[in-house]
Length: 126
Image (cartoon, rainbow, N blue to C red; front, side):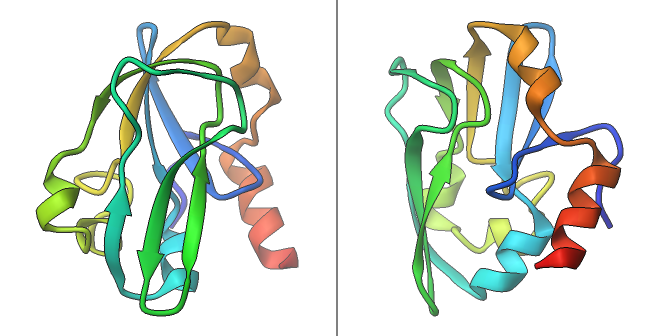
């Protein structure tokens, strides 16, 4: 199940944009590949970041994986619930498992991301 209303990066992050704020997480496909997530290193609130910069780390029983920001901007909020319950990413990757929110510097960057159909095709090729 890939939500149609979201945009996707080829590195398996999703972004939901409301106004000038994007909420970012990893896809269901990504969390399935990682397995049980045991720790999340969250980005620093207020930090300015550039598109496809590694801003967080997700550790699972299998591996640690960098999380990249799909757009440039300023981190405005992080999901503190992941500190106590990193498994929220496994349980609800598109909802309670969000990782950070970012104020978009250039909304045109969204046009460079994948649609749900394009992302689904990517995952079938991997």
